[in-house]
Image (cartoon, rainbow, N blue to C red):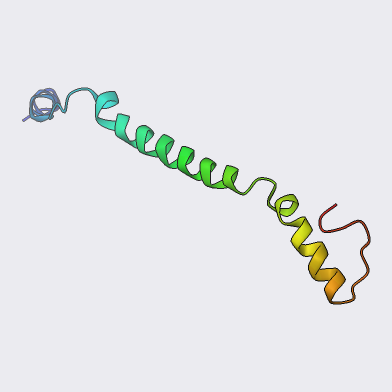
Length: 73
């Protein structure tokens, strides 16, 4: 066999899988959903220090700590 025959046989034996973009679309969809879910978790912890500052100030007063501007302020 010569090189041309081997090239023709190799090209004929190559498998065709279809549209690569459609097959890999789900990787992007899963990554986007995961990113959005983690973003919602991060967003849920916004302003937590200010939400609990009266409780922290009351604790500091009860235990004799000096209040220098409050908790997180």
